[in-house]
Image (cartoon, rainbow over all chains, first blue to last red; front, side, top):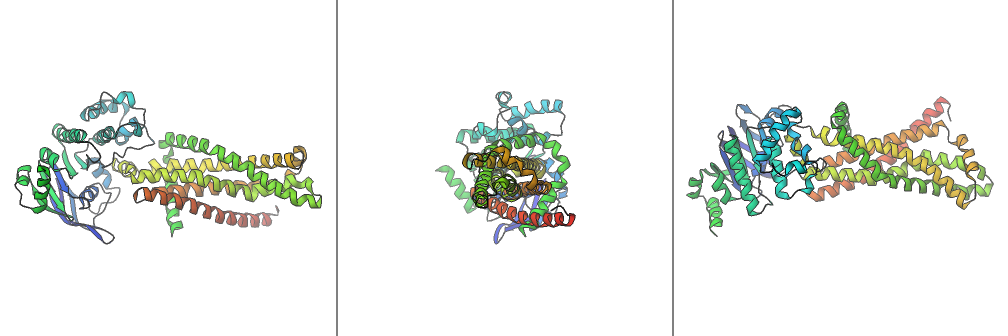
Length: 243
Length: 249
């Protein structure tokens, strides 16, 4: 379970989170929707200690992490894997090194067992063995995104955080990523939090959705509840779908 | 303020030195890359630094009929002052700017954050191998560049002033003593560390997309040159005092 309780965060004079409160249940696929600059990505970064809130509480299971030190976040980062908006593969390391970054301490023999499974989950099991000594820029953007997802899956985190996972992808690849999110969540029994502005795919993939505006959750519910919502911003997202 | 933050950053790097073996492959790649990429610059800078100084000394010495001491004077002047500073400037512009841009790009494309989220310390992973590679190659290239600059001076005066290399080399040991070598080596080491620190610090602190990367490169170039000039003055002052105190000069 993840809980944000009245979390506030400002950058200089700009208030980004203005009392964010939301609870995400274990095992669900939870989408956070909203326009750009409303604090969606900022919310995710708080969960892995890349940002510290100004006030409020953030709970990951039984840990209140808002004042955790860098050392304390070590365990939280094992529990929460973040897939960044950009693929964020390390340009100076080959694809194999990139893939195994999170499992460097794992014995080689064990790595050889878990790697094919992660590659299979992202649909790269056939091409990867031939390209493992290449470098990230040699892959297409979609392949880089999938490899980044496999890299996040390998340490086997309980919670997967996706920051705009379909940004920069065409419809076909975007759909593929959403299918991956859904299947990984079901087959690996993961809690998934997906930050997105793609209402169509969110409705098809999510167990529950939150609509965020100006650093607060303004609407929350299952896809059916969201479809029937009277909240103005939610309605405008839904109207965009009909056009 | 910046110097204090950079010093703090240096202490973080130094604390992690024992972990360099973990990133030895990245260190080796960076070392080879930096060395190969900078060799032509170092050779060019070395040859012309030595040559231009030799010609300048020759113009002045020939009026006094003292051309016989040209080799010693030129070597001493080159390796004590002009050589280290000019070659360091070239390397700061090339190696420093490149490393700063590389780290900066990694920062703004979330590569550093991503590695941190995977439970890896980004300073050990990204900065330590680059700092060590830049500092070590800069030291070696500076020493190599100084040797090349002596040869450059020798060839220049042989070609233009018809002073034979034997005659040029004869007086080197009289003028370019151990103190010159200690000065040159100390400067090379300090300049190398400064270059490594400044480029890694600015690259690692990059914020604000591609504009931020450009800003980091600019800061690296400016700060490196200013730091090198100040360090040059400080090292010369301190070591000359020490040499006098020891009766070596």
